[in-house]
Each structure stands twice: as structure tokens, then as C-alpha cells.
Amino acid sequence: MHVARVCHHFYSAKNMKVGLATHFYNLAMTLKKQGVRQTIVCGDSDVKSGGVIEGIRVFKYPKITPFEMLNSGKAAFKKIKELQKSGEKFDIIHYHQPIFFKIHDFKQELGGIPIIQTTHGSPSDVFANIDWLDFTRAKESLYYCLFTLFSARKADAFVCVSPGVREDLIEKLKLSPKKVFAITPGINPKHFFYKKAVKKFDILNVSRFSPGKRYADLIGALGILKRKGISFKAGFIGEYGFEKNLEFQKIKHLALKLGVLEFISFLPPTSQERLGDVYRSAKVFVLPSISESAPKVTLEAMACGVPCIVSDIIGNQGITLDGKTGFIVPKKNPEAIAEKLELLLSDSKLREKMSKQAARHALKEFPWEVIAKKYASLYKSIAR
Image 1 (tube, rainbow, N blue to C red):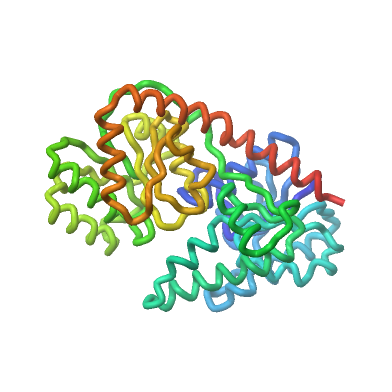
Image 2: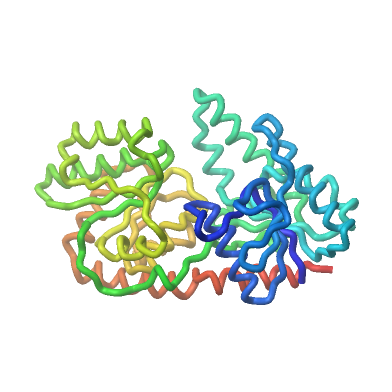
């Protein structure tokens, strides 16, 4: 089995930061351990085209400008075709992100190789939350939805990263359930595991400071707790350079206005090795986003035994088990967040019960070994 995996970027472990870069790397390395041969075709990497990262060859297609992003699929096709001419034989083409949708136009030129796409988002949530006043972001969001629609119909297999997104796409796009799969991101049990630890934070959030993460709702919930006389310490871990982020400044101002700024620690990103310790130092994890695909931070928090409070959006369905591994609350609702925070912080027995259930659920369903086996099985099922 030889898979051409197409993505925007692929970095070695030492230069990998967060987000999709970790997904691409961890999936590739785990598939390799399971005997799946891969060639990476990407736009950027920390090795030269034709170089090797931990036994996996990486080829870069020519750099394209932001104005040429719609041609990403064509650029990837040219590189794969070039590799075929040099003697490489591929059984599957697997691309991440719908921006590569044009690769379907060249399927016959590539020998009719089956094509799989993984979408790392929820088109329904993305469309519902488009800010039409922000032209650039609105255009990007609209493109994402349209490209997903096109590629979902063309792909031989279409992978969603949460059960909720799968069910939504089957219903909205009238896709055959036989070609749509739910395979979540994975976690590394070496870093994210259950162990009792001293609690430094009552409340933890790990996400970038952007409007879609709805930090304002969490800050509002903290304001409600303060008015009720409930003491707490909160930790917020943002992205690199978040101090210069306009959204961060807005959140900080709101926290000051509600009188909760002194109870919040704003922390810089940390390594995967240390992040597990941060999760284990918290009593409750909160992610009130209005759009997620399958939030990796929620998987990591649960694996570390931290009950999660998340918003009722498509991407969280099937990830957080309401009433068992945490609570799902209405989105944009600080009162609902505050209610569940008060319950979990005041009831140590309930918190401990949910903590153990969260860890069992995450460590059974989401380790990278489990996720890679699902992809390997999918590859075998559609290869010619």
C-alpha cells in the first residue's frame, strides 16, 4: 500500500508547532509504524523537496501566491504526475483540506487512482457564523463551504473529523453514508493520560484568541461566578504572540470590566510533553466555541481526566458525551456555562466520576494508533 498524502505543510517534530501540523505529522508517523508507505506532497516543509523526515519522503510543489490558492490541487497533481513518471506507483491519493479540490479534475490522468479527502471543519457551522462585514474572512469561509461541497461529491471516500460533521454532511448534501466516514484527530497517550495531580486551576481553556472561540462567553460566566461569591482560578493558554492579538486585548478589557482579570492567568503555548501536565492541573476544561470540527484540545483534556464543558455545535457531537465526560451547553450562553461550572466545582464526587469516565472514553477511542488503523482500513477498502 502506497499513499500519496497531500497537505499544505509537513514539518519534522522539532519544527512542528500546533494545529493541523501536529495532525499531519502524528498520523504519518503512526501509519508508518503500521506498515503504510507514504509519500508527502506539500507546499512547505523544513526539508528540501525530495528530502526525508523520519523515513518518509517529502516532495514540495512550487510555491503559489495567495491569489493562486485555488490552483493548489493542480499544483499537487503536477507533482504527483511527475513522481509517477519517475516510476512511483500510488494506490491512494489522500488530501487534507478542500482547497485541493481541483485534483479531482485530473483523476484520469493519474490513472484513476482512488481519491480520499479529509475535511478538518464543519461547513454548516462555518457558513452559519460567517461575518459578512469582514470581506476577507467571509470569502475564505464561503470558499471552504463551496470547495467542501464539490469535493465531497467527487471523492471516492470522504472523511469527517467528528461523528456530528459526518451526520450533518450526509443529511445536508444527500451523500451516501457508505462513502462518508468519521475519523477523529488522535492523541498521544505518552503525553495525555490520567493521573491525579495537584490542581492549580479551577478552570482551563486552551485555544487561540479569535472571535469564533467565544472567550467573551467564558469571561461572562466567570463574572457570574464572581457575583455569586464563588472563588476560582482560571488559566487561558493562547497562541504564539497572542499578546499582540486584538481579540486578546478585547478579552482582557472585558475581564477587567467584570472584575475577574486578577483571577485569570494568561499563559503562552507549551510543548506537547508539558501540555499534559497543564491539563492535569485543572479541575474543569471549557471550550465555548461557535465552530469546531473535532477540537483536539477537548480530546487531550478528557484523556488527562478533565471534565469538559463545550458548546452545542456540530463538531462536538460524538466527542464530548453529555452528562458523562462533561456537559454540552447552548452556544453563546454564559449563564449555562456558569451553571455547569458551579455544579462541577462544588461537587467533587461528580467531578471525580466524570474525570474517570472522560479518561476512559478518550484513551479508548482517540489514541493515534486507533485512528491510524481506521485510515489504514479505509485505504485497503477502496484501493483497486
